[in-house]
Length: 148
Image (cartoon, rainbow, N blue to C red; front, top):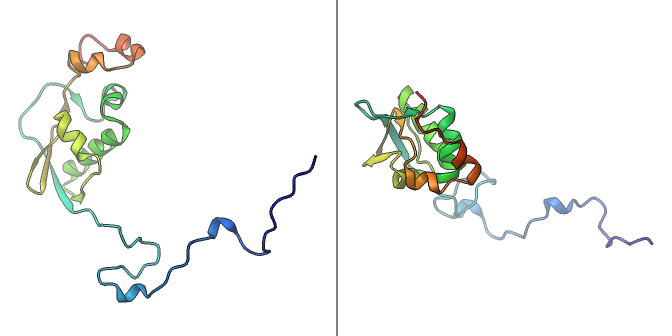
């Protein structure tokens, strides 16, 4: 049995179809002249991450423990943002406000002081309430003592 495809105009790639756009983008105030930027796009403000002074108990943010056990709790995007914040703080760079910053603030992995985000040098281990939220296989493999 042969199925006929709907007739298609030669030379038109349907993946490139876009709704018609009327008006001149240069007449709209605040709109970039680049055609690939949406008019509703808002640039994230820049923040200055800083390393927390003092020594705290836990593992380094780059340790495999953070990726293995914190990702199921706060998500991969939040852990990636934590790593970016830590790297930027260590190098003294500013960066756009991370999308997952509220998750980091709620989890206590960062804190905010105006335009500065303070990240610890070490990430605290999961407490018993957070360990109970892990999937069973990770709950069984979670170390009783935090690795150094």
